[in-house]
Amino acid sequence: MKGFVRKLIGYEKQPELRTLKIILKSISKNSYLELEKIFSSMEGITCPGLDVPTKKFETVYDPSVISKEKILQIVKKLGYCIEKVFDS
Image (cartoon, rainbow, N blue to C red):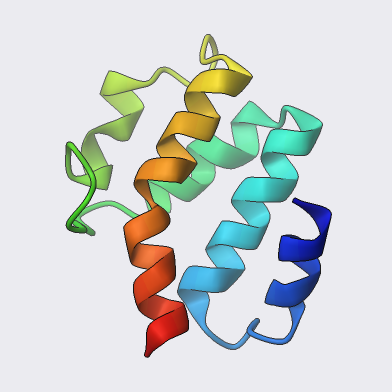
């Protein structure tokens, strides 16, 4: 995981990857408040591979009670978007 975050440092100009980096750091620090900010700032963004549009994350996954495992599941669902960014 650390190597992946380091790899992202060179891609910081791409907002999707900057967001992912913040998500990964938030997971490692259990910073649910930071994740809540991220999901609300992504409002309206949809992506193939996600079960729901990101604007629904606040309701579906309450950041105050969400477990680390659940956050990791969300990040895995974002994987399709991440791959798409790296492939482009």
